[in-house]
Length: 330
Image (tube, rainbow, N blue to C red; front, side, top):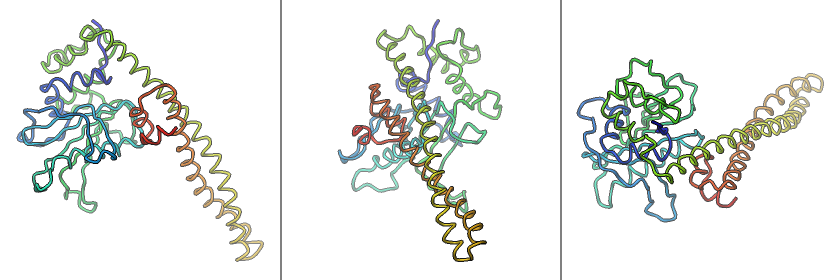
């Protein structure tokens, strides 16, 4: 028996976008629902397309979107590569889902929470924790919360089933995402013993897909590999250029500041002290400017490379943080 990875776009949407019982189990396991009354018992799938009321505004698509009987909305996304713009994209999509609930003339109190669950096949924080729960809180007193939006990010590479403090279904679902791929010959027995995980594993069997779907699956991984290679190469080149620009600008500005301050305090002492302080300040400002310029060049170069490879514009936007309009102008 050959299995496909559940992290691919095709398989992730098949498992969680076509089987309400599986997405219910997944959400109950991964979301921070604190009481039995908060648990999800029924969902209705919603269109994954978040279309703006104004056609000139940004259009976006998520992997899975659904709501329960209370009207709470749940957005589930599988992100293969972390980019600096991904958090903003998540916030944008959740906010759009939140405000779209209310038609003109309705009371704001009718608004129901939106939960955004993001599985990231990459690392993005220095924390040892793999699970990150974000809310809008009052800075001085974090017990004061503005309800409505909640964001969960899971760094899959950091997950280990040794986290015994996690509830059982949370561990089983994360093992499902991280332990099964094309190289899996036999699924662990403890996964197959659970009815929901068992059903999800069956959806990953290669025999369940057409030849066209399998070709699309392979193309997806080729695209991910190519994108990672170009992002890595562009980032390295951008950082090198950024450091060079920053150092040069820092030296020039530092010398200028050093000369001005040195003349004010006396030629001999001022030159020595002013140049030292000026160089330190100039390097800091120059390095910042250089890194920013380098990152901008990196994003544009990466987008151009991906566009030449015929990667979809929406995918390029997710990978680079550039807007669709910026990419189309390249």
